Image (cartoon, rainbow over the protein chains, first blue to last red):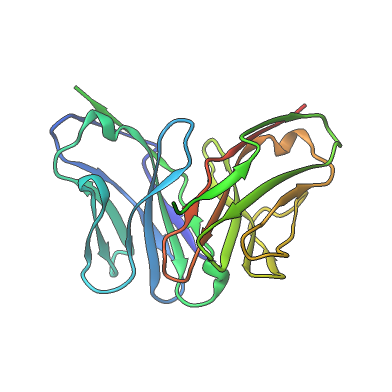
Length: 115
Length: 111
């Protein structure tokens, strides 16, 4: 069975500082990995994905994530946080091929960026 | 505009009264799924569909039904809702290797 762990319920960071939201996963074979963001009273918005190729993936709003196969991690990063980045972030994994594109989500990390 | 549309956005109902939450996508995606979001639990998959007339259980299917008679529609049916089904529900659609698109959510309260 596939699973995703987001070890931090909340991450606090000052505006202008770098941020990291952690994610580790467990899945058979090589995975598809995703990050989504949820703003209050909104649906989930796609940020970025790793399918294959370069381990450093760049996505929307200046976010990036690094796929580390040996550590089975896919941490989300941003060099300089903005107050507007404050939201709930979800990491998700999907097995390659088959599985109905079944996405398994982590429990989410609340990011709070303060002035 | 590519989108997944859920209705209704908010619903308050009583225990045992059958309800349907509709979901429609305009991207010709073959995969569609339903999730529920609960505090501290993240999103959990209820049911998914790989194509028309092909559905399968997700992680928390008890108390729910789905159907996929057309590619674009994937309704979620609660035959006899109970208070433990009070939650925020999301529909999503995708293609293989493509990110999932989510609807705006349906906040269901069962009293």
